[in-house]
Amino acid sequence: MLLRIDSIGEPAYSRPMKNLRELGLKLLDYHGGQGTALYAVGSSWFAGRPVPVELVESAAAELRRYNIRGAKTLAAKLDAAARAAKRAKKR
Image (cartoon, rainbow, N blue to C red; front, side, top):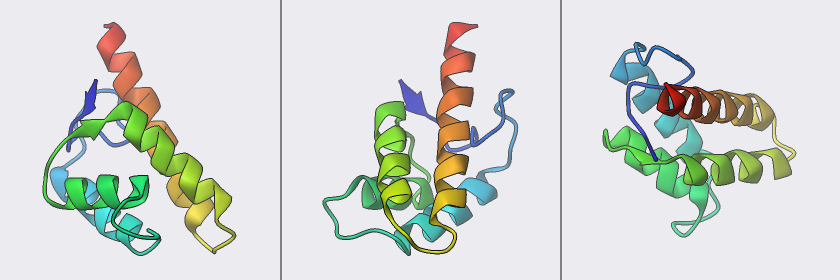
């Protein structure tokens, strides 16, 4: 299942693309290299491409491991996006 660019945290898939692109850019501040889930999600969303929900969940787990201000808040946003995508798929 792919998480669309316009679906972050909104069960109705109605949030503007701009917000997810901004979140993608924020994720890139935390990545540890091009091979990380954070880099994959951040760069894909910034480019306007969907990513697999499993990859979003991996990026959230990666953020939770960091003891950096703001990382846990971003992880919560990623978790919300993954939950919204899963709920929408069940409909």
